[in-house]
Structures are given as structure tokens and as C-alpha cells.
Amino acid sequence: MKPNILIIQTDQQSLWTISAYKKQNYLQTHYIDSLAEEGALSEHFYTNANPCTPSRGCFLSGTYPNIHGAQANNQAIFQEVNTFAKVLKSNGYTTSYFGKYHLDGSLRPGWVHPDRGMGFTETNLMFNRGHFKKIIRFAPAQSNDQPNVFKEIGDEKSYTTDWLTHELIDFINRNVNHPFLSMLSIPDPHNPYITRNPYQSLFNPHEMTIPPSFHQDPSELPPWINKKKFHINNIETLQKHKAAYSGMVKLIDDKVGDIISCLKAKNIYDQTIIIFTSDHGDYMGEHGLLSKNGMYESAYKIPFIIRYPPKIKPKSMHTFQWSTIDFCPTLLDLTDTSYSPGEFTGQSRADLLVEQSTKTGGDDFIFIEDQSLNPSEKGEVGIIGNEFWYAVNNSGFEVLFDRKSDPLQINNKANNKELGELKRYFLKKLIDHHSSIGSNHFKWLSQLI
Image 1 (tube, rainbow, N blue to C red):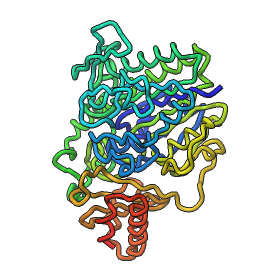
Image 2 (tube, rainbow, N blue to C red):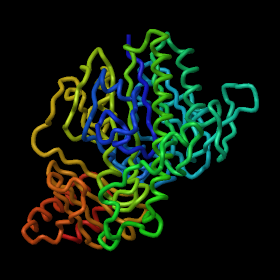
Image 3 (cartoon, rainbow, N blue to C red):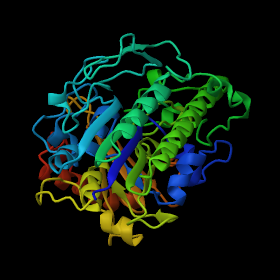
């Protein structure tokens, strides 16, 4: 029998919040950690694009933003592109989606019609965008019922994370005898940094640690950083946000526990591929910033945990680099689902996950970009190598970080003349890449050489 597939994707959740990554010791995510304990944890999984919309498009379609069409927030994905949901649906899966989508234009909340679900057929609880804190149905639930959403804080039944989890569990209970693909897209822990009690007051703000790069001189930040909007210099405000952010993650973890209990109760836990990930991270004080503006690693490096006992060995730790465009073919290969060669830009990493390999051979380059409606006005692209992180904008400003000696990305080596040849090497790689995919970044990049 085909395995069930459950994808839990959060919004703006940094890798350090998952205690399985051992980056901190005050926020324990026991249930998410259990998935890693019984499955695999990827230490170097990246989104190819930032922020939400382009990232989610890459994850769903296995292609870069200029190919899937959703190049900036609130742009709709091209309806004709293929997705893992379309492929799995055509192979007999029941498909459903719960929560934030952000790939159907500017409508808010914008409940998504099944004809635009990109392979997800149960879409009545799929809303396009918004970080609502409360969801209520005032009428008896029907197949086409669209709930009401609110900015005010809900309770243990109506808070968005709780409500969506309950609806997912209800779906699972109704579909235990047929293979399903379900995606739970939780709008937290994205700002606004506030959640329901007791999670809002679960962590003491004064006990929140301050990132070592918090006091970085704002003048040292790249010019593409929107300092007015994203820079924060008040420690108390940062600690308050971080405590609430951590509370949101703890609530998410508890809801993952509820989902695990449901799958076990229905005797389908080991027959279900469970994936936990996010669309991008949040600096949460790193470089004196909030949110994800710019091209530092913690905005692009995201958690990825997968549990599937029939194929993936427990306690697997993977250090090879891969990205959101690779997810689509990887998932299809793990489920032994056929698809057309060349259908997706990304590469399947299923064999690496199954074989516990740590390297793919050579330098595992990851290409990244920030959202761009008009690259001549706002163009930012980068390349991640095993040892260096390089990014450049359309005015020619460069950053080059040594990933081994400077993991916090504080010391920009772009002006080091001894590394000039290395910069040219990366720039040429970027030009060749954007030329090969027909990216609208190619024009300004080619003028920098």
C-alpha cells in the first residue's frame, strides 16, 4: 500500500528553535525531536528564495521563482507548473491542505478554490495569506464552508494553530483506509509576536539570550537591508519578542504531539511519511535585525526533519546541502511515484536520505535570491558553497563570508584583494546559473563581470 504523506510547514521558524539541532537548551521541542530521533534530521537544508511566496513556490513545484512565477510576496504561482500534489493526486492520493498558502495572489484571507489548489483538492480550509490568531465557524461545517478569521487572540479551541490541527486530525480520522497527502501550514511563529496563554507567558523575557551579533554596527550591514523597518536596538523589546516567539514554537510542538497520537491511535504512524519544515527563518536579533530581510544564513537555512521507518533509518544526521527545489522530486522518489524526467529543476536526494550519505560529491552549490518584481530596482542573489557564502546586489555590492571561521557572518571579506579570484568565480557561477534558467536577474548580473 502507498504510504500516507503528512507535511507540517510553519512560517518563519528558525532552525535553532528545534532542540534536536542543539543550538539552545531552554526551548525543548520534545515531539518534533521524536520525529528526528526516529527518522532523519538535515543540518543544511535551505530555501532557494525569500520570503514566503517565492519560497513556498520552490517547495511545491521543485523549480526556481522565475519558472514557477511567484517571484515576490502576493504573486500567484503559474497554474500550469507541475507540483508534487498534482503528481500524487494523479496517482490516487486524496489530497488536502490546511492553513496559509500564500501562492494565489493578493487576496486576504482569500480562500482558495479547488480549481487553483495546484493538486490539493480539499481546499476549503486553505487560505491565501494572513497571520490570523483566531478562527471560528459560525455555521455547521459543510464541504464548502469558509470559516471566519480574526486578529484577536483565540483560545485552546479557536487559536489558529489549535484550530487547524484539530481540522487536520478530523481529516485523518476520516481517511485512514486510503492513502492521503495532507499539508498543515501553520502561520506561526511569524510576527506579530504574540500567542495565546499559557504559551504567551511560558518563557521569561529576561531569560532570553541575546545573539552575539546583536550589537553589530548598523553601518556594517549591506545596503539591501531595510534598517528602518527591520533593525532593532532595544534589548528588552527583543527579549519580549523572543519569549513570545518561543511560546508559539512550543504550542506548535504540542500540536505535533496531538497529531502523532492520532496517527498511532489509527495504527498508521509507521505507514505515514511525516515531514517537519518551515518556509524561512527569522533573525530574532541576529545582526540587530528582526524578520528575514537580506541574505544572511539564518533567514535561508531552515529545519527539515523526516520520519518514515520503512526507508529512513532512525537517528540519521545528514550534512549534505540541499534546498527547497529538491524536495519535490525527493518526495516522489521516496514514495516510488513516477514522474517525467526533467519535470523539476531540483535534484532528488532520496538516495542520500535513505543511505545516510553525507556528501553528494564536489561542492554542493545552493543558489538563493531575495524577492524581486523588478530586478533593475531590487536585485539580490547569492550562492552557498561548502566553505563560502557569496551574495551580490544589482549595484555591485558584495558580501563574502567564510563559513568555517565566521559562522555568525560578521566579517565581510568582499574587500579582501586576496579573495578577488574567488569572488569572480562565484559571480561567474551565478551568471551561468541565472542564464541557464532564464532568470530576469541575468541581465544585471552579466553587467557586473
